[in-house]
Picture 1: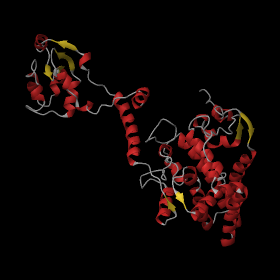
Picture 2 (picture 1 turned 120 degrees about the vertical axis):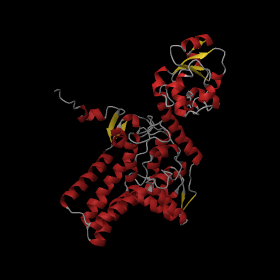
Picture 3 (picture 1 turned 90 degrees about the vertical axis):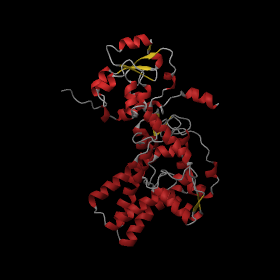
Picture 4 (picture 1 turned 135 degrees about the horizontal axis):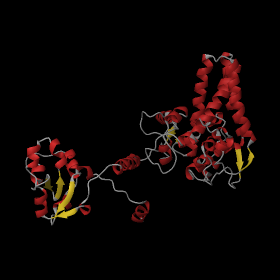
Length: 426
């Protein structure tokens, strides 16, 4: 037996779609290497106390509420106390300042799946997940970051202050606060370092990275499949609801990442709760009419594939024209029946006819249109569709064929080319 190919074990396999690399971002490499190493060491030598585990989860939630919907998309307005809460929470995730984070994210939305998208999915899973942060490339605009407008952020005094003091604030909120809290309150200083500090950061980092990577490769596209973003439940669970990425890319300024109340989006529930207490205002929601249009478009696209995979009856133009004399002559040797101007050869169906052989044969060589459509028995949609598959010709000088629309064709999906659609719209 031939040996299994091991190319997927080589780094070159995972970096084959990377842009030209000109250097390493050593600070990012150190941070993203040390945090998981410290957390693994902690799990190996120190049992986790229940209080520390609970606080790790709480502090993780605090970290993940972060920058995204308020500063990247301006999906609502927050009062100063809420802004400070979210600012410090986002800082505790140690993923960059608001200004840098929101700029890269806006660039991702504006230039999705192109070389100006910082985490362009066309560059491969490793690039989108972490590669874009670890290496320097030849792009003049940085790590593939296209230009976007961030003047609103530059005018925000809190954002400017956090950007200027980011590294000090990251140390305070990312390390000192969780360690001091666990050590001072219940004496678990090392648990604060290993679990609330390093392990929480590791999970927060890679959960967020999964939105850039996994949520562009796995999941569903219920609103649009032109670009790569997908709805991915696991990513949503890990990131406080950010995993409904297909919805988010279609409706980015909606404060919700999932519009149904039961879809897992704790950040949506948190923002809604803040609005009840007057802490958040101007919550933006996209029109349900437009959301449902997106869903309808994708459902029609799915059904179009089903439709194209079915065998449909021959159209009038594809059939030969029979004279009445030929129709009469053919009825002597086979069960040909005229219905709505179409001649149907029901010979192979005679034995299966629910009304019996004699009844069907009695209409051979006759026009059974009135009988078929209710004169004797009103046949079902399935019967009408099946009958159409037996077409062998059309009777000459008959207008009924132009008026007949089968039940299965009443909602037939016709596809327009994009070019035609653009011409019509213009």
